Image (cartoon, rainbow, N blue to C red; front, side, top):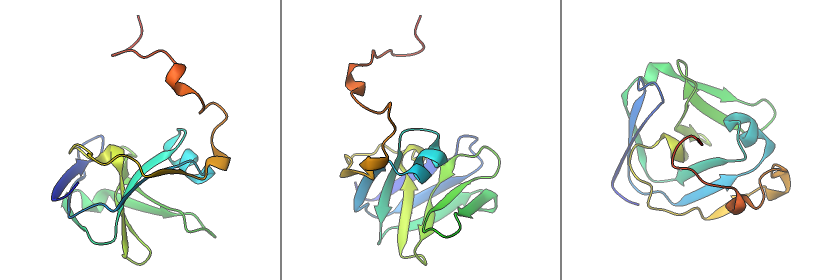
Length: 135
């Protein structure tokens, strides 16, 4: 995945571009990421070389740093959607994969913190699939 990647929040007030390559794609199952997403894991892309450019709504980005941890989350103040963040004093760009409007061609590198995996997040390949809502 290289070049230009575009993304936005759910309400569309925040829009951004990432110029450059992602070096990693991880699914994190830690308790913090479960709380952040309300789901089994967070799906984030990482880059130490790409540049983040806010196209719209940068003033609507809220950053939450969980006290006494390295856990940080950026989100839209209007709709709550996760948006990119610069972490570790700007040396690492973290982009929530679901916030991208561009297709993600990378496959996840690994699952992280699997010892914290939700008890219902197992053997999901056996759960029925539907194109939309079940009828």
